[in-house]
Image 1: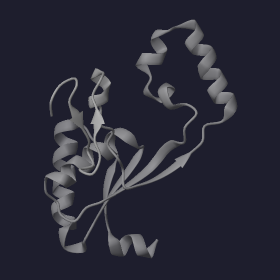
Image 2 (image 1 turned 60 degrees about the vertical axis):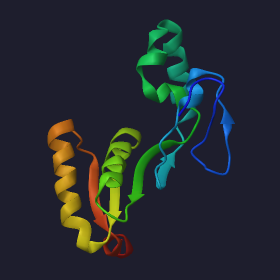
Image 3 (image 1 turned 180 degrees about the vertical axis):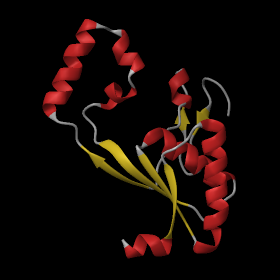
Image 4 (image 1 turned 120 degrees about the vertical axis):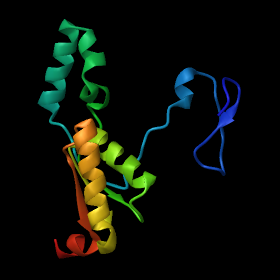
Length: 138
């Protein structure tokens, strides 16, 4: 990546001119999300609280997207248990309340070990392994 004035894109077929520092920001995407809309009364309540303390806006991540659907459950579909699965674990742990990594049955044990490693070392405790067969049986 280059700095201001350069073009960048995560899609090789399109590019975007970088004008500000936050043009570098790439938001991770979860393969499948189940979201809910927050109640209007809750949104109004949060807006009233932020009038009392401006720092609240910066210290509570939910406030930034109050009017957008709120992600509860996320699914990442992985073809292997390599470094991409590690990225899936990190994205799910950060951006949804309950995350499920979906892999082939033969990869489930390796995925369980990887999730345990991340749990032990990073405190991640909201990501769980599933196989395609388990998804179909639900």
